[in-house]
Image (cartoon, rainbow, N blue to C red; front, side, top):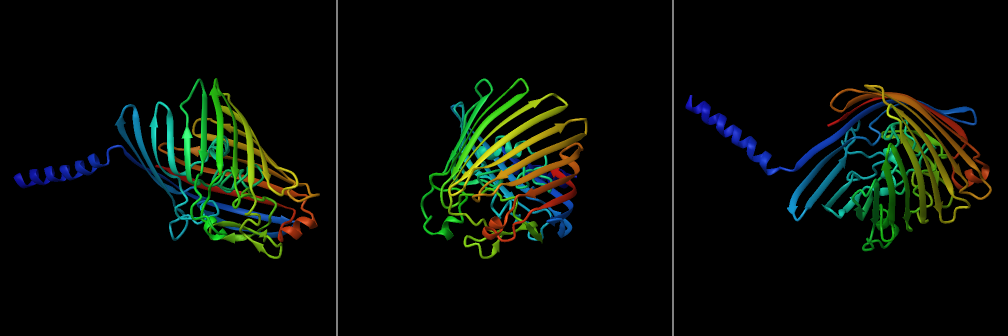
Length: 392
């Protein structure tokens, strides 16, 4: 009997000690699986179609740690690792996570002044409106890169490496965020620079106001060379289904052969966007406009987004519309229209099912565009998708 009591006491002690050692530490993550049937046409002819099973950049694990320091200060640490729920390797190697450590990571300090973070940080441009307003983000139905929102690290994809992020406390509904990268060491040569998603001179900023059901914001960012033009070119033709989803072709810098790497990586880029949202209770309506200016571009590219999110108990229906007007090449006027409709069914404790339909139409691709970006074409992409997601 005494042995049983002693064993129970030792077991309890072994459980309590690790828990005490990690006080203030939280562990969480997301897992997602999605099945999509898609078809792509060029000039009315079916070019490619098929079924894919994807994580779509949603899967991730994170550890968050807060420590009270006194004087009203809190020390912070956060590590996110993006993982591929559907992939054999486990790490996410999709276009939305080109490196296995592409997740957000930082060490920081929080107090009455707001917060300061150092690391691979979440861009204020991306997380003001943007992905926060795209109900279908990280699915085959999402707006970014499909004619409704810009993508790229300085759009609505990825994180800013080697950066400092300041976020203010809320003042009467106002909130300010600013990120800057002072990194200029070891950036000699394109190979070294390609390993960075932000470098010296890159910044992102946002001003947001929330009150009385309204949310308004103004945001902007800048990418210095090399690394500009990181917006996705949605008129570029999908050339097939890879292990991590749709693979897009784009012309090389010389225009001689297609490549999945952005051709204009030596340009600088300056983006601005404005958004308005109103929550009626069971329905929220939102709109966002982006102006994307790349050096050497004939005219700025503009992305327009409109979203309607419903809330009916477990059901959350969604309707999203968008349009991209792209005049990158002189004398061209490319139009990309986007529509997505679907719904989520949210169970308790973070589990949900979802499904829907997306259509992206591309017009205005001329012979001059094809000459600069081989593989580009007019056409329509249609996607039916169903999936499930767990947030823990």
